[in-house]
Structure formats: C-alpha cells, structure tokens
Image 1 (cartoon, rainbow, N blue to C red):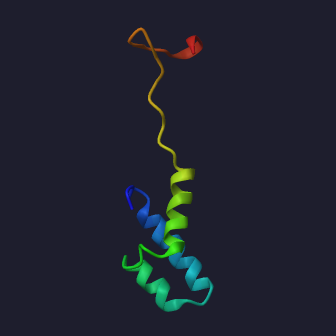
Image 2 (image 1 turned 120 degrees about the vertical axis):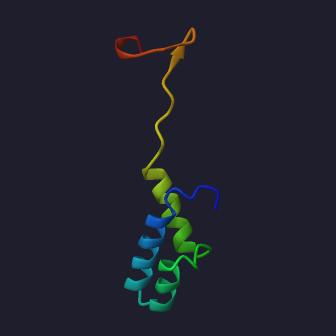
Length: 71
C-alpha cells in the first residue's frame, strides 16, 4: 500500500468488522499487522483516505497567496 498514514485505524476497523462477523482468527491477524493484504483492510484504508483528505495548498496569484475576500 502506497499511503500508510491511515493504516492503523484501517487495521482496527477491519479487525473489528471481521470479529463482529465471527472471524476471530482473521481479526487477530489483522490487529497484529499481518493481514494488510486482506480486502477488508484495503476497503477501510480507502475509506480513511476519502474521509481524511489533506488540505490543498493555498491559491496563489502573481506569486502571492490569495486570502480573505480576494478568493
């Protein structure tokens, strides 16, 4: 996975989901960090990245930042 900034929350969410579905062994593997190739971890990581978008850089005009009402 290229972006690992949200991997821990994704692992925890996937482990919680699998545990609720009755897959105790798989949930334990994911919680330990050994199941990053599981589909549930990938989905949770994709959702994390959608919900936690990095802010875009400020808009510039003529090399200066545009702020306030000038936007």
